[in-house]
Amino acid sequence: MHRELRNEAGEALTALVLELFRVNNLLLAWGDRLVAPLGLTSARWQVLGAVVAAAHPQPVAWLARDLGASRQNVQRIVNDLAQEGLVTFAPNPHHKRAQLVVLTDKGAAAAASALGLYDPQVNALAKGLSPGEIAAANRLLAVLKARLTAPV
Image (cartoon, rainbow, N blue to C red; front, side):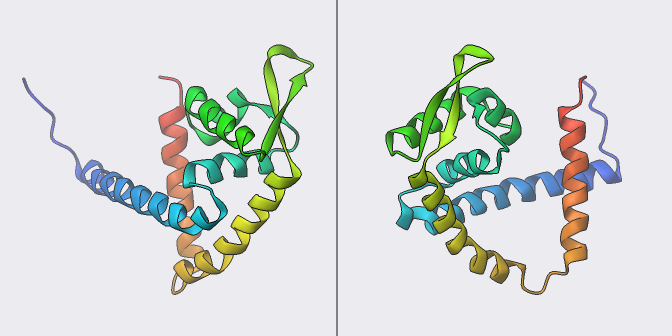
């Protein structure tokens, strides 16, 4: 079977993808250590953050879409957050079965505490990086995300 060789850009992108995999794993471990004192994990913190960031309560499927995650995985995490009292469910006037995920006061406090731990740590991580360098990396990731999510 004949395989086309990667061009120079394909080779560079492959190196970036492999580095992103490594960095993703490191970020998840970093996040786990950061929010462990709050009884959170990176996954729970990420979903809680999506609930906080939403302009209004959303169903799990919408949260999953915003996170680029599977609905089933986000549902499992939302159920865990509900069990901890960080979110609750409310009826959805637009869909009988897809309840809305609502942040509780306890969840808002946990999210605020997580940000209190995060802010000084992210500032330390950013030391020596210019906002322009970070913005360029963000633009590249946005292009890759758009291409990966575009209809085939």
